Image (cartoon, rainbow, N blue to C red; front, side, top):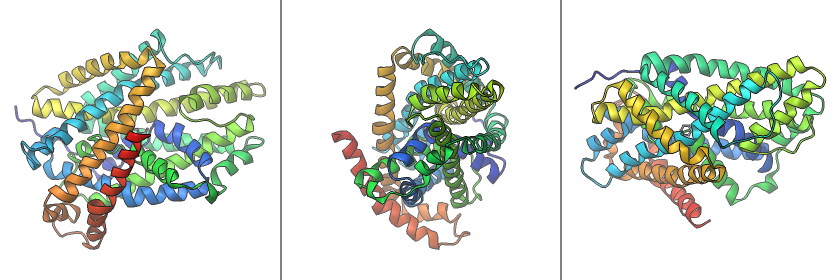
Amino acid sequence: MATKREHFGSRAAVIMAMAGSAIGLGNIWRFPYMVGEYGGAAFILIYILCSFFLSFPIFLAEALVGRRTHANAIGAMNKLAPRSFWTILGYLSVITPTIIVSYYSIVGGWSIEYFLKSFSLNFGEFRPSGWTPLIFNTVFLALSSIIVAFGIKGGIEKFNKISIPLLFVLIVLIMIYSVNMPGADKGIEYIVKPDFSKITGRTFAFALGQSFYAMSLGMGIVITYSSYVHKDENLVASGVGTVLAALMFSVLAGFAIMPAVFSAGIAPSSGPGLVYQTLPHVFTGMSASSPWIASCVAALFFFSVIVAAMTSSISLIEVGVAYLVEERHMKRSMACLLVFVVTWVLGLISVFSIEAFGKVDAFSSNFLLTAGVLLVVLFVGWKMKKEDVREEITNRGVINNKVFGVFYFLIRYVAPITVLTIFITNLVL
Ligand code: PHE
């Protein structure tokens, strides 16, 4: 069954979809804390350098593979390097996101639960595992799969085009409220005050790891989404738009979260603890003076987390769905149902044990992701023909060639060495 492939409708749609994948839990629960702990503005500077000199070229490398082949991750590798070692990259690119969405959606589920609890402000103790999380996980995963079932234009593009601007509006509103709380200046200082003494080799490794995760690299997402990008679209421009959107959102999230945390006199934290333990304390603290406003802020915040997580999980789901539709000739709705069932079953491992959740997260986002990134840079830098790579980046010579030299150098030499170092460090430590 040869189905006609869909395309995103415009550059804005491409950027919104890519930004939707990029903006997620990583920006909300990890980035602000990392900034505060690893040197404030000094860390932000390093993060920007890592984003532009490494994540961005790697993003382009994935994007050109997708756009050149107009195929799902496995199909793309079958087209570019049939029956070779490199097909591993294709399989890895489908397996990693499928594992990630199995626990990512559990977090989406917690957020639905906390959104509902915002109205009573009665959060109680954080219970990450068990039957309630399973129910909310099912709801979240089902909603995400349904959006994907509506297709690229009718589902993914439409959802992101509304969600991403909405997310920016919401986070700015929360930020305005947060920075005006009494004692908020300590939180602002936590994020902006540069401290270069905290910068070490490890800071670079952390910044890079976070920026890979934030850009959704190494897991077939950029390959898959770019396969829906028109031949004459400027990949470099879409890439810059995506990096900037993700970066801006991360910084805004920092200003929305940390001033409120400091104002409540609570020590900052990272990960689930920040969103489902620290912040609920902040919200209940606020309710003493104005319960109505506290409820509103909490509800808006958890709603934002749900939306941010959903724009990411639909990108994770789409990778597997694109594969099933194109390589296994399934109907899109059936493919979504299958991915839903598989990820739901896989999620049972993480939903009943928070230790298992942590292990699956560490394995996929440290090991599998880095392996995927390493393979993709080696593939584009060393296996693909330089002329083919140039053709994609310059749209067959239409776009200025100058960036190409820099890009190619980064992908061929700088990225493999850096990523290999991180990969080995992750294995050893
Ligand atoms: N980029 C997302 C975030 O920062 C995470 C993510 C990873 C999303 C992988 C999709 C795929 O939360």
